[in-house]
Amino acid sequence: MATDRTKPDTLPPLPEVIVPPHPEWPKLSETETALLKEKIKKLLKEQDAVLVAHYYTDGSLQDLAEETGGCVADSLEMARFGTQHPARTLVVAGVRFMGETAKILNNEKRVLMPDLAATCSLDEGCPYELFSSFCDEHPDHTVVVYANTSARVKARSDWVVTSGIALPIIRHLAEKGEKILWAPDRHLGRYVQKLTGAEMIFWPGSCVVHEEFRAVALERLRKLHPDAAILVHPESPEAVIAQADVVGSTTALIDAVARLPNLEFIVATDKGIFNKMRKVAPGKILLEAPTVGEGATCQSCAYCPWMGMNSLQNLAEVLATGKNEVHVSPDLAVQARIPIRRMLDFAEAMKKGGGFLSS
Ligand code: 13P
Ligand code: SF4
Image 1 (tube, rainbow, N blue to C red):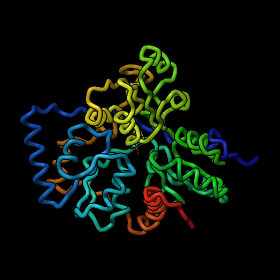
Image 2: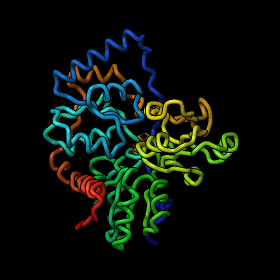
Image 3: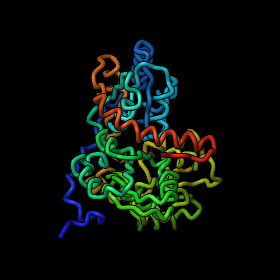
Image 4: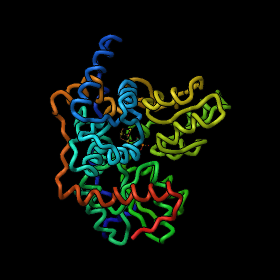
């Protein structure tokens, strides 16, 4: 009997994702930090470079990006920003798929990353060959992949989405009657399916950071803080999402802290986001949603080990040496650019408030 791959648990075993320990960066004094920041600012100017950082990176990198006219953003805005900024070099502080996306969209630019080993469990858990044969078995499905994937996986897809745009894109495809093959984050996939009623099959991937949020412990914490709003990133398990007042991308969660009248918030996403949340909503009380355990029993404790590979130290080093350049072969970039551009064009059309006409 043929294997039924419409059921995630009937896929062949996926590779085990090795989660690295959190990097330990030497603690810098205030003077050392200030000197290093000055050095980086000078190098950014000399190299005609701009810093594009994700909300999960260390606060010092986020602040520096803002101070130097770069951007700190979610993965959708990071992709867009790189295409609109005139700098010849993009320095991407985040994880590899973000650097690759920047390169795919800006082939003429140099893209550097503080550490090329900074990957993502979703990307690692969706190897191209297995994914491609999954797609081959479902030729009548539109292939939609999350941005947290390799350039090859993107090139095999019809659409790329981020958490900030997944819902309207899936709704749009469902309205056209398309059947969707979704990869790799099963929690985000199920969340958008529930809201749109789309016909979808799923790749069984997950984020090691968000997978660790615990619904029962969250319920207990809510009872202790009955007036707190619960903010959840949709990579979290379904029972955690079910308790949320707001579910959304990192940008949407930051906006919620600023916008909602609540004084307290329980936040289920990487704790790097607190840096920006504190800035947009000073005085509000931010609580970490509970994770699976403490210390040794917790793989991430709401802190992505790959995002943690970015620091002021290795940022200064790549700018000074030019090492850690991101390369994507031009042929692959041409293919991968199509579904990414489709997403960006969709986002642009939404912003303008117009309907979206796709081929
Ligand atoms: P956002 O696009 O919401 O920033 O998410 C990226 C990510 O990797 C979340 O874990
Ligand atoms: Fe990937 Fe999760 Fe880290 Fe985001 S938080 S980069 S999804 S491992």
